[in-house]
Structure formats: structure tokens, C-alpha cells
Image (cartoon, rainbow, N blue to C red; front, side, top):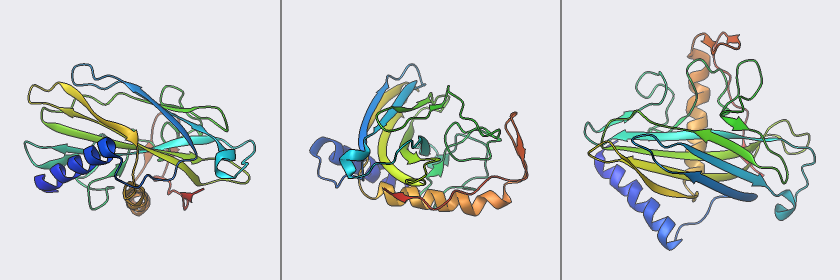
Length: 233
């Protein structure tokens, strides 16, 4: 992606955030984001509390979890960077967005281990009225790097609302020329980022059958697992 595209994305983000001029994405609940950059790291929590009644739904006994997509750009070298091992653009969409995972994770749901359980240090699942919380601490990036992320709350294991998207949240930070992190935009996401998310899911699903053995220390799969079709509630 060319550097002018980086500037354009940053400008659009700032415009949406400051002037609320962009159409918001679907949200069926509320977000609570907390975090402050420390050095070049950004320890944070991103929590979504599902309110099905606010959207005319019930979704009894549903569980919601997170999927996170990221976009990382080195302004000095004009190249995309990736948080986990992959060929340049191997599981990213055309704009450089990709589903975040640790190396060896066969699932794209954030914090879902290969043994089928969610690691509480990364994602504590929620439900109606109970926060679904993602924990992250990106860091180690070089100076002059842009780090953007979108957290997406999704019904997982629900008898009536399974595979439904409940809301989207955009957060970001920028590493300055001294490699010190500066908080940038943190706000509910806006339209087009939901479309970008679908592109990132497609990129993951195209890559998954070719990934080779995935072993995160809790279990082994012959290759990564594709996402089901996901759509707004």
C-alpha cells in the first residue's frame, strides 16, 4: 500500500472520530476500551457487552467472543508488517488487513486455543449483559509504524444467534520517530470497516487449507480452520 493511502486512512479515521461524519457500523451493545501506550507497547483491554433486547433480539444463553483484524504499516520502508509468521500478504486482503492470531493457532477466533478452549489472558467470552473482553499488548514494532485494529464481537455457540456479528470497534496507536507509542483513534467502527472485515475473513478462508500443520502447544491440526459465514445480527 502506498504511503498516501496510509495518510488517507488516518485522515478518514480522524474525521469520523472527531466529527462523527461517518456512518457507524452495526452495534448491538456497548464498548469499553482501556489502555495507555508504555514505551513502544500498548497494553489494553477491549470489552463488549451484548444487549440483544436493544436490537429486538433475545439470543438466550448465547456466548459471544472476539475476532480481531489488524493493519500494520512501516512508514519508513513503505511496507506492511505482520504480527505473526506469514509470507508477506499470505493471509491478508488486498489492503493489508488480516485476522490476528498467534503462531500455530488453527482458529481465527481471538484466544481460541487448538484444544477448543479460550485462554482467559487473551479473551474472556461474554453473553447478554456480561462483558466479552479481549486483552492485547502489541509492541516491538519499529519507529514510524502505524498499528490499526478492529475488534469484532461475534455470537459463538448460540442456538438462535450463532455466527452473528454484534458490533465492531476500531483502536490504534502510532509509533513516533523515537519508537514511542502514541494513542491514536479508539472508537466504535464506521462503515467500510465491516466490509474490510469480510475481506479479511475471505483471505483467511482462502489461506486456511494451505497453511500446513498448526500446533499451538494445546493441540494439532493438519491446517487452519475456515470461518463459517458471519453476518450482522
